Length: 429
Image 1 (tube, rainbow, N blue to C red):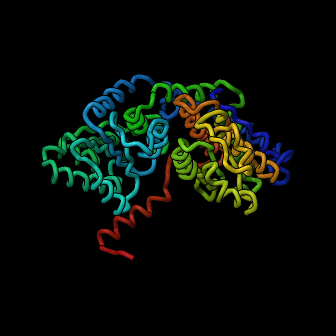
Image 2 (image 1 turned 120 degrees about the vertical axis):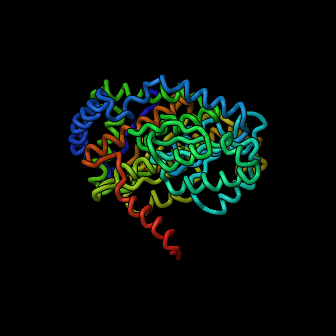
């Protein structure tokens, strides 16, 4: 296994009355065999392509060729997309993007994933449009926020570089068929690539949606797929796979009233991953009054804020920590000038991070907060692909156990409809 998945601290023997009941867990784990049988059937018939995408290689040449065209001609790629259209690519790109450096070579990737007008204005005034490509991503091709940003950016490029420049500086990914994004692309003559119509946005990180921006950022997308396929093969070959154990544990803890699922990695590069997970879990499972609330957190940062709540607040949390081997990593700490800092003597920044992640795990254990640990020896493309596939499978299996559809999102459609009505009727707060 690419990662170690330790769930032992989540049960009553360690977590006390707040821990999962072993019998409830065992029953749920037995039910996962039926859930995986459903997944296996869809995998064999390819009716849920998310279950076969990790082993595909036929689509990678197009992604790599497109990424090369971008990196050969543009210094900046701006990805315009909401939710699953951007979060997967952002999570993958974080493996390579350095937030502190303005690149002098290669292509910098930015994600525009909200419609704050101030942010939009700041983006447009900071870009060198001559060296920028805009990639608009919308599965439906009709996402209002994405189309709004796209139209604004087209207008600015046409204004500064001329109408003919739009064809060169824009690209899109959308479902095949007739939709607004494709109509705009046809009008201006820029390329549209196909979004897989059978893979929803929040599950699309391992498709062109996430892999194209990741490849532009310098990520090894074959290794991402390889890591994901490792977990896929494990899940369908093992009697009690790690994603199945994770799903069963969630069910057992929901029965204990653990309604908040906290994901807390000790690695800045995994911060965007927690946002991706938060959407995946919430939008897939929050139906029919069921599910639990995912909460993105980050160590060691949140030891100085959220950890107080986790330890002494309502006993409704299930904690998942992702620990990375950090010992000896990073800069050596200079000799402290004060004896009170003697504990830092001879250590590195990574040593401190390692001690803090271990300390948090032990503190949570002592406070009897249900806890599980993912441990990575390294954070690379294989590991990222494995983590993504674990959480996607864990989500799909949990959905089966809760008897909800992991792939729809009926509740959010009302908000979208009302937003369009308010614009048409010029209503505002």
